[in-house]
Amino acid sequence: MQDEKPSGPLYYADYLELDRLLSSQRMQSALHGRPAHDEMLFIIVHQAYELWFKQILWELDAVLATFRGSPVPEEAVGQAVLRLGRVVEIQRILIQQVDVLETMTPLDFLDFRDDLIPASGFQSVQFRLIENKLGMRRSDRLQFHNTPYTSRFTEKDAARVEASEKEPSLFDLIEGWLERTPFLEFGDFDFWREYRRAVDAMLAADRASIRNNPTLTEEEKTLIVACAVEQPFTTPQEIKIELDLHCATRTIDRVLIQAGLFGRVAIRTYPYTEAEKQKMSKALNAA
Image (tube, rainbow, N blue to C red; front, side, top):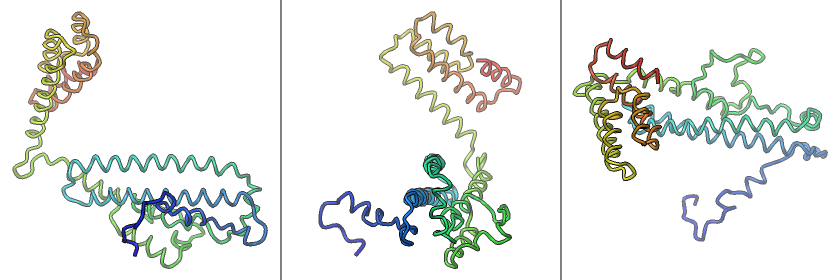
């Protein structure tokens, strides 16, 4: 049974099923009695593509499942971003594989190309699934030989790809999520009230971090709290001058960043007049 627990210690080759994996390169040119050396490269590159396509679909399906929820948990958004970042890195690898494939000359390819007819990369089901799950629409596609893009698939594969067209894509789900975000007022929830609480908590945590920093003198702690926390609208240039005078150069970069961050957050959060907001923003942007 496939779900049975192994009786002995797990072995590397068994875990990766290397016997199956490494015996899956059947050269058509060899079957025709005239093996072409570069066909092995051609097979392995395309098998690697399909393995990476599988991983992309694995990540996409997880992200799609997240955004099908309503509401989408805030912590799940970060996880989705990480997974989509992984997809981006995989795409970089896929592009780099072209460099490997280009070490095969056109004449080398012609040594076995006729043996592959009518097989074609157009028949990659996983590639089409990725396109559809990301949001590619049938109306966006260019027809090849005036036929649907599914015409080169088997009936079973065509049905699978066409079914994916009917499912909400990542584009659809992200668009719906953005349309619901943020909830400025929703039942007992008030976005600005909660945002103000979050900012206050952040400032309190920063005060505590500065006060408990054993590398700072009491004078340095008082100055940093006063400039970067209690008065976040002091310009970064003013903070830098005062810190230089007090020989606290180790903390300049951090304080400059905090001043800009806290200033912008507070400007947007607290009920200042538009004139005051513009004046404060201009001071921060000049930093």
